[in-house]
Image 1 (cartoon, rainbow, N blue to C red):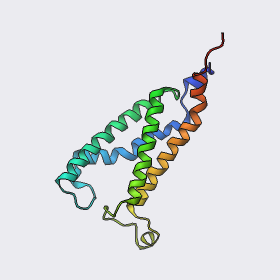
Image 2: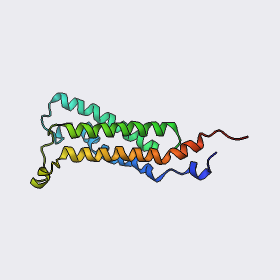
Image 3: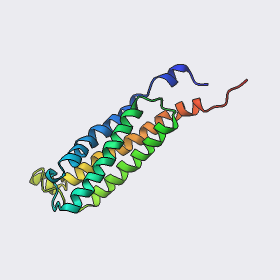
Length: 153
């Protein structure tokens, strides 16, 4: 069995669960309570309803991330949530990179020349969080493997 310290404390990379919350919660709260004030183009009634549905999912994912953050790294539920959030952030990154302009804001002419727009900046943030979930997974595999080893005796 693994050393008690490896089981008791959580890995420093577990902060990625909090990063998910800090990234998603502002949009989720605004989308749930004030979706018509979102800075998106062509907000119609359908988009507002879909945004509220998406916001409800994001609020629930933030609650799950908060509840899992301090759990031991070897628990299957925490590992399953991490994989789910990795897939979500990676997919969202790809979607945002391929999306047409839908945020009517700019970082200025110089950024526009470099194709640094709100959609790609947002996509980059999600891609980094997805990558950090992969890093968390890889760094905590030894902990999970140590706990799941059969006992000698």
